[in-house]
Image (cartoon, rainbow, N blue to C red; front, side, top):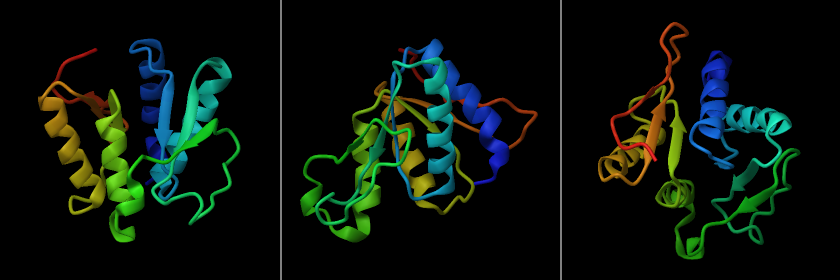
Length: 152
């Protein structure tokens, strides 16, 4: 994920906090976008101290211990993940997080990626009125856009 996405990501995190009242963010830790998202929320916490940042754990912490990175307020391991095969743990944890979230901020670079599949799932949930999706664009001149769906 190119760092050029950072300004759009910062704007969306700020909008989600100020306009939508979001105070809890769940971020993974396996990709560049995850790192950028975590850095962005950590920076936003300086201005908005009530905001919480949680690390999404796809693997049981006893099986694969993870040291909580600086700036995170806690970790979240979805219930029932113990029975999920390891090779699909990240995908399943991401879906669980989507199933229990109000919003998704995403950026997809590769059409055949797992992120694209997760976005397709998120769009389906949005069509049902269960989720609000914001898709970031790498084009600096075009602002991020919310996909059609209800506001909350």
